Image 1 (cartoon, rainbow, N blue to C red):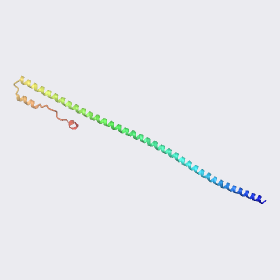
Image 2 (image 1 turned 180 degrees about the vertical axis):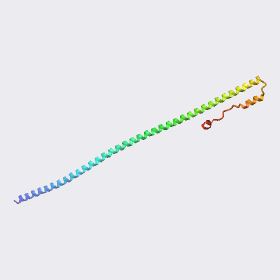
Image 3 (image 1 turned 120 degrees about the vertical axis):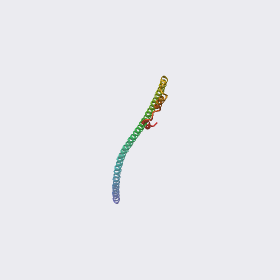
Length: 163
């Protein structure tokens, strides 16, 4: 009987110890389960924040790319405008040079025409002198000195325009 009682007591003690162990294991499992849920929630929060940060990074990268493209286009426009301005300046300078050359050519032609007219006038006067020897040589001399043909005086445009 005593052995039975001892066995029963031992069985009861073992069962109580098992129940205590099971309760302790159950509490530990519950604590682990709670920690798992907290860790899982923290992971989900971090993943959401990471996804939002990636989206922001993509938007910022796209914005930066667009700005780079805009800057590139603006630089191209500036270069194009500078080239066009340079071409206009060259065209203007060529026009000025052409006008200056035309003006010089015109003046030279006028000078040549005047010299030819002077030569013809002198020839005509010589013929008149030969045809009418009675005309005084002083009168001819007076006419020749009053008609002086040389290079024309500079005009206002020549004083202003660079050569």
